[in-house]
Image (cartoon, rainbow, N blue to C red; front, side, top):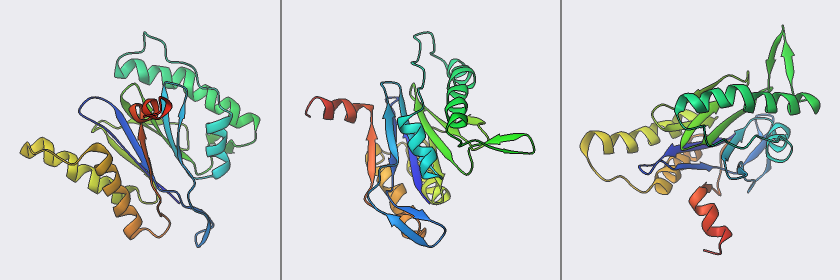
Length: 205
């Protein structure tokens, strides 16, 4: 079980955070301290929940295409996901035996992903359908509703009252706190990042 939470900040940058507990079955803790969010090249920030093997396949084996300069608008990104990203995922998952077919319906077998692409958040569901998070907040995993409540409250307060909310990193941390507090399948430590942090760390910052 998992909580992955994400938001797009006022500068148009995607932030994402996750807990780090992995379980098997409903009651047994397998490990702690396992990162569930990762970068794929310079274009993608990805968080995964569900089958560990599927998340590992996405992280290490799926070759996602580079974003072309012509991919700019929400519609451009949607088309790019549908015609290039989804086929890449389906092909690799099929090759390694991670595609489930039930009555002709293809699925990733209880696995979901949150994708940060081009300053946008997209939710990829287990049937390989996908939707953009139009409020610029999203969460997946067993703690999803708890985290979404915090994300909405923090971001809506800024919009409705003109107040300055906590930093994006602090909002993500609060959302993860809520999930950890009320969902025993989620646990710290947390991993929270964005592309700016990645570049800073790469440069020794």
